Image (cartoon, rainbow, N blue to C red; front, side, top):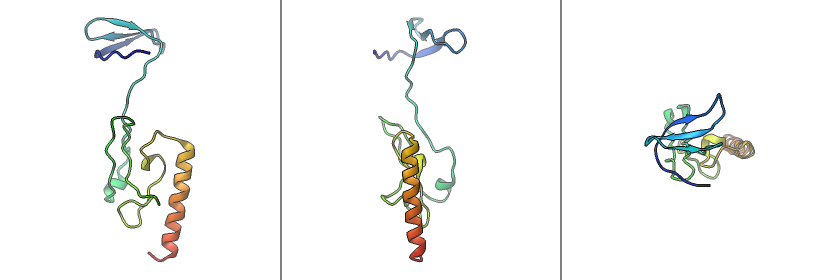
Length: 115
């Protein structure tokens, strides 16, 4: 696998098939697949609107997440966050389910304690 940092102006191929990357300098590179770095951002604003803090996307994983502590609590009293919204790792169904379970348990304990 190689790395070519020239700006790409077009992807060429019939239909949904990928044949080549076309560069700004006119060059082409025959390819059958392409890896693209993306940044995952929060798509809705309720946590932000309620005052929760977000992480800054880093150079490696590029995920913006709601900041939580080990018990899924945000910095806002009574506000918990879980799943893909509250983790800086790539999306995972198993991790999201475990995170939601923990957040629910922590919220139940807080409610039972009368906070």
